[in-house]
Image 1 (cartoon, protein in one colour):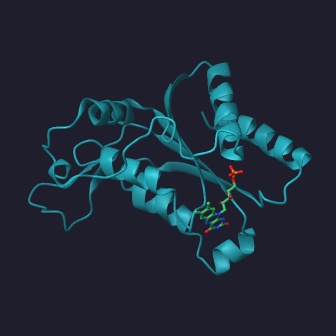
Image 2: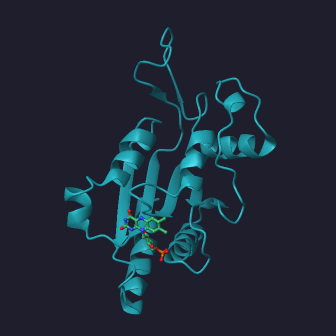
Length: 195
Ligand SMILES: Cc1cc2nc3c(=O)[nH]c(=O)nc-3n(C[C@H](O)[C@H](O)[C@H](O)COP(=O)(O)O)c2cc1C
């Protein structure tokens, strides 16, 4: 399977990078074809310009390539920390520019954009790995776990990717080496079981 792996964390020594490394190892070990983007390393421009909004917009070669890869992917793995209950802006901008009409979703005939979109992505599955410094109970009760809604409902379900799993690793700031080692083993096992 072609699996698209998208990482958004600025620090190469972060636990998020360790998650990405382990996920890619597990995918390759299971014979998958990996398409990896480290958005900060690539200096991805997250700002959607006005002229790129129309469905038939002329896209730069970089954006067109990202769109082609997203359309062709059989699955996605998204990796990022919880920043204010949202993905880092560089990843939100990647969604703005790549999960675009005609690639990730479309509106049905005679629908000007007010209706329920039709998902277009070919990928059957999406896996999201997050990290945070908030207890799970507080994340759910006080903040209503916005990352679950964003990735599961607002993005993947809308774009036609209905098999979804998300794992939040917390609390990173007080975690021990042993804990992180176990979490990385869990990443490897989850990826191998999911794809
Ligand atoms: C700009 C910014 C915003 C953050 N917002 C949150 C937050 O809303 N909730 C939370 O639990 N942690 C928050 N954090 C902490 C990060 O989630 C945490 O540092 C990260 O998950 C640790 O993973 P790493 O070791 O890969 O850096 C924030 C960190 C930064 C830099």
